Length: 108
Image 1 (cartoon, rainbow, N blue to C red):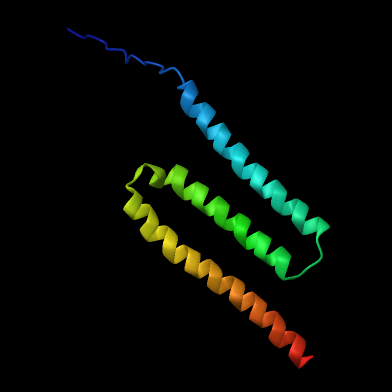
Image 2: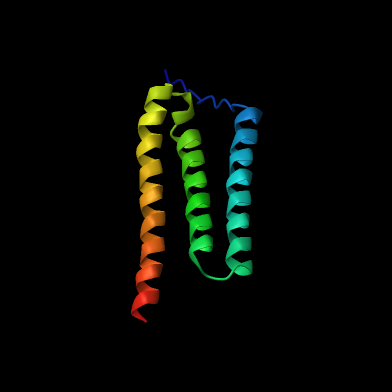
Protein backbone atom coordinates (compact mmCIF):
# COMPACT_ATOMS: atom_id res chain seq x y z
CA UNK A 1 0.00 0.00 0.00
CA UNK A 2 1.37 3.44 -0.97
CA UNK A 3 0.50 6.53 1.02
CA UNK A 4 1.53 9.96 -0.06
CA UNK A 5 2.24 12.64 2.52
CA UNK A 6 2.18 16.27 1.64
CA UNK A 7 4.22 18.75 3.57
CA UNK A 8 2.27 21.37 5.41
CA UNK A 9 3.68 24.88 5.10
CA UNK A 10 2.73 27.27 7.84
CA UNK A 11 3.24 30.93 7.05
CA UNK A 12 4.13 32.91 10.12
CA UNK A 13 2.68 36.41 10.11
CA UNK A 14 5.27 39.19 10.16
CA UNK A 15 5.92 40.66 13.56
CA UNK A 16 5.00 44.27 12.95
CA UNK A 17 6.81 45.53 16.04
CA UNK A 18 10.12 44.02 14.93
CA UNK A 19 9.73 45.44 11.45
CA UNK A 20 8.88 48.84 12.90
CA UNK A 21 11.97 48.68 15.14
CA UNK A 22 14.22 47.78 12.19
CA UNK A 23 12.89 50.71 10.14
CA UNK A 24 13.28 53.05 13.12
CA UNK A 25 16.90 51.97 13.55
CA UNK A 26 17.58 52.43 9.84
CA UNK A 27 15.95 55.85 9.96
CA UNK A 28 18.03 57.03 12.92
CA UNK A 29 21.26 55.81 11.33
CA UNK A 30 20.25 57.42 8.03
CA UNK A 31 19.51 60.71 9.79
CA UNK A 32 22.92 60.78 11.49
CA UNK A 33 24.57 59.96 8.16
CA UNK A 34 22.63 62.79 6.47
CA UNK A 35 23.85 65.19 9.16
CA UNK A 36 27.41 64.03 8.44
CA UNK A 37 26.90 64.78 4.74
CA UNK A 38 25.58 68.27 5.53
CA UNK A 39 28.70 69.02 7.55
CA UNK A 40 30.92 67.54 4.83
CA UNK A 41 29.56 69.81 2.13
CA UNK A 42 28.97 73.00 4.11
CA UNK A 43 32.03 73.30 6.38
CA UNK A 44 35.58 74.05 5.44
CA UNK A 45 38.14 71.34 6.17
CA UNK A 46 39.64 71.64 9.60
CA UNK A 47 39.88 70.33 13.09
CA UNK A 48 36.27 71.20 13.93
CA UNK A 49 34.86 69.29 10.94
CA UNK A 50 37.05 66.29 11.73
CA UNK A 51 35.95 66.37 15.37
CA UNK A 52 32.29 66.50 14.31
CA UNK A 53 32.81 63.51 12.01
CA UNK A 54 34.51 61.52 14.76
CA UNK A 55 31.76 62.42 17.22
CA UNK A 56 28.93 61.46 14.88
CA UNK A 57 30.69 58.24 13.92
CA UNK A 58 30.98 57.32 17.58
CA UNK A 59 27.28 58.11 18.09
CA UNK A 60 26.43 55.73 15.25
CA UNK A 61 28.81 53.09 16.61
CA UNK A 62 27.22 53.24 20.08
CA UNK A 63 23.75 53.03 18.59
CA UNK A 64 24.69 50.04 16.46
CA UNK A 65 26.33 48.28 19.40
CA UNK A 66 23.33 49.03 21.62
CA UNK A 67 20.76 47.83 19.11
CA UNK A 68 22.34 44.98 17.19
CA UNK A 69 24.67 43.61 19.86
CA UNK A 70 22.02 44.19 22.55
CA UNK A 71 24.43 46.04 24.84
CA UNK A 72 21.69 48.38 26.03
CA UNK A 73 20.12 45.39 27.81
CA UNK A 74 23.29 44.53 29.73
CA UNK A 75 24.33 45.57 33.18
CA UNK A 76 25.58 49.11 33.64
CA UNK A 77 29.04 47.93 34.75
CA UNK A 78 29.61 46.24 31.38
CA UNK A 79 28.43 49.33 29.53
CA UNK A 80 30.79 51.58 31.51
CA UNK A 81 33.70 49.16 31.03
CA UNK A 82 33.29 49.72 27.29
CA UNK A 83 32.35 53.40 27.42
CA UNK A 84 35.20 54.73 29.59
CA UNK A 85 38.06 53.37 27.43
CA UNK A 86 36.21 54.60 24.35
CA UNK A 87 36.11 58.12 25.80
CA UNK A 88 39.89 58.01 26.20
CA UNK A 89 40.32 56.75 22.63
CA UNK A 90 38.20 59.65 21.34
CA UNK A 91 40.20 62.10 23.42
CA UNK A 92 43.42 60.61 22.02
CA UNK A 93 42.14 60.89 18.42
CA UNK A 94 41.15 64.52 18.88
CA UNK A 95 44.51 65.29 20.50
CA UNK A 96 46.37 63.62 17.62
CA UNK A 97 44.38 65.54 15.01
CA UNK A 98 45.01 68.82 16.83
CA UNK A 99 48.72 68.14 17.31
CA UNK A 100 49.08 66.89 13.75
CA UNK A 101 47.61 70.12 12.44
CA UNK A 102 49.96 72.15 14.65
CA UNK A 103 53.03 70.22 13.48
CA UNK A 104 51.97 70.59 9.83
CA UNK A 105 51.55 74.37 10.24
CA UNK A 106 54.92 74.70 12.00
CA UNK A 107 56.80 72.78 9.28
CA UNK A 108 55.35 74.51 6.23
